[in-house]
Amino acid sequence: MANAYRRLFFVLHTLLIFFIILLFWANWRYSNNGWNYGNPSAIPPNTAILPNTANLPTTADLPNSVQPNTSDLITPYPFLAELDTLELTGEELQDVSNRHEAFVSYNASGPYRVCPERYIIAKANEYGRHHNQMEEYMNTILWAERLNRTAVLGGFWVKGHWVDPAKIYDFSKIAQRYCVISDKVLEQKLLDSPFLENLTYTCYGWCIRHAPLGPLFQRMQFLEQHSGLPPYVSWEARKTVMKQAVLVYSQEQADVMVIGGQYAFLLHHGLVHHAAIYSLLQPSPFVRKKVDEFLNYYFSSGKQYIGIHKRHRESSCKKGLREKMPDFREYTHLSPQREKLPLAQCVISISYLDALHTSLGLKLFSFPLFVAHDHQDKVTIRHLAMKGARLYDKDYYPHFEDCEYGLCSLAMDYFLLVEGEYFSGNVISSVSENVCFARLGKGKACHGMEPGIIRLLTHDVIEPYKRYK
Image (cartoon, rainbow, N blue to C red):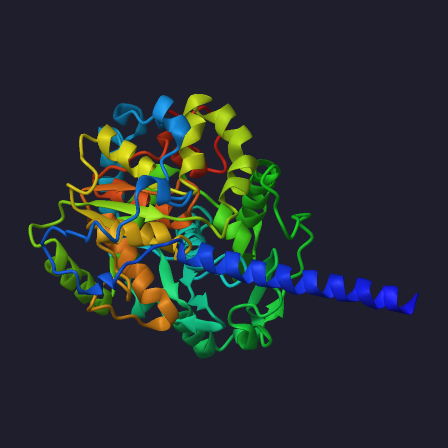
């Protein structure tokens, strides 16, 4: 009996080892996918790329992310430029221009609207990464005027560190037209106040722990609030909750009001306002220099290129779309056939790009192409690079330089996408949305991203909902 158990154990052990070896082999095969590329970083600028076709895969060899969808050969991606292209109307552009001409003053003797000495701060280190944090700050700046407050611009939280926005961006044009100061300026103003112990602060959302200016708050008076606002807002409840939040914020008497990151993220003001403020955002001197170097290296003829933002959202893209799709169907004119487009943006395959280019009257790989990506589909990115796409990436650009834990290269991608002739991305990506806002405020267009969805996602939280085209 004991020998039978030993034999059974031996067989099971052998099978287990074989299975583990098989898994390692399959993983190795999946990782390599049969690709045999050299490092494309030495690609010369302004020249056509002629890859060694012997090393390039055939259509049959392409992985799923690159392989043309056979169903698409029958029913292509339903791009239609007149429906897919989002531009502001003439009236909306005039509203943007009017907003750009409205200046503010930070002292009572100034000639413009004086910024109040009551403040609103977004706690930006709790809800999403860089471009979520950007939206939180921008939304707070936009809403400060309505709430009769001055917004406070804090740092960007990345990899356990706070990064000074001035190292990446130039907010000076925004600060000339909107009431916003840095957290360092507010800190100094509070320290200089002889009434610091009499000043008050309060907090809404997940923001009590590690609140901005925490040490100073310990010397101020905390005003408790019983608003009934939940610490977290579900997508389904956001319409009701955000209207309630705005009412509560408008009645708040504290000198300094902190709101949680998710509340700030959802505090939308309408597409025209978003376009107006994002189009004023400029790169820092370092980022501006690197953008110009890249443009001169690859696009010496100017900014005649199409920018593509390839974003997967850590494989949560389709889940996020499924959550939002009922609203998209109710408040936009998204047809069942066109629902394929936002879903396809979770991957942005070669066949998708080909169909997008065709809809714009362009030919894929014949018109200059810049691609920003999230490093989650290296196979397709290699294929694009070998076909001539340009990337600000250490593996593909010989003069790559980064700073601030990756935020400088992210800003490079952002401004390169803003400045191109054409742009398309992922409609539920914060990066793509922010790029689109900036382009719209500059009189440019966004392509292939369902205009009605972008308008819906920026819907002013105090306005009645309507259907967007």
